[in-house]
Image 1: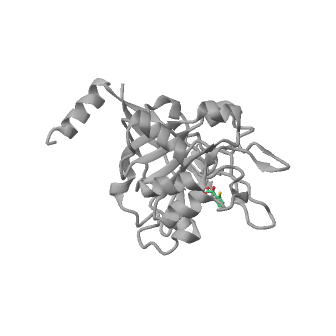
Image 2 (image 1 turned 180 degrees about the horizontal axis):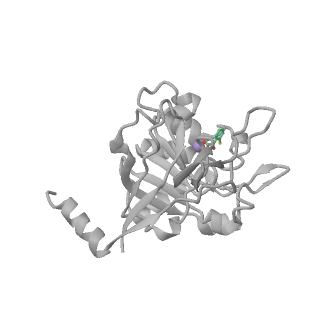
Image 3 (image 1 turned 90 degrees about the horizontal axis):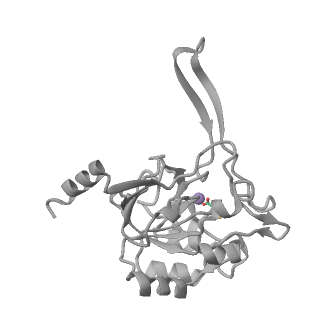
Length: 259
Ligand code: 23J
Ligand code: MN
């Protein structure tokens, strides 16, 4: 135990521990969730305005002002994002415990199912099947749903919406209930939000949001490159910006894996 960080340091230096970037590029083309205008105000897209670029506005420096919603691109959902989690004193971006922001990842590969059906839903039985192969999910783990979504549909079709609404994969309410029973730390996906595209119409609407945040647990959305992670063994690092009373934040998500 005393040598665990020394071993990690050696692994990082000799390349036997690989760092994988699970983050999408954040820019004007970053897909944003679109909510029905009758029920909700939508988030603005990302935008960037130059302050100076080694010019009259700042001779030796380049910097920009950015405008974006908290839930833009690869981002973290804090418990206070949802009404069910609003009263957790440690449920905001500035109050959640740092210890919760680095941990093991269980990666459930749903890429084949999603390629066959963009509305694919991972069930509790699907999670149990994964556990039968890869071992029980430990309390405090992050559970990540691999769908290869960006590779499958591209940035232009990321929301995959038609006149029946968005079509993208996600969890069932029973799946989320099972993960809460397992006392996971959080739930991450490669789609625009932690719930399926059709989740507004579920019997329990938005289960990943309502139930996970109701249990003081976290979400990660618009992850990418989950195909580069093993089913178990990776460690993810997921600290949101320390926004005062923040409901979530874009972040850089890094994973450490054995090369
Ligand atoms: C607000 C309302 C509904 C949803 C969302 C945000 C997200 O997906 C999000 O980014 O948290 S479903
Ligand atoms: Mn969000």
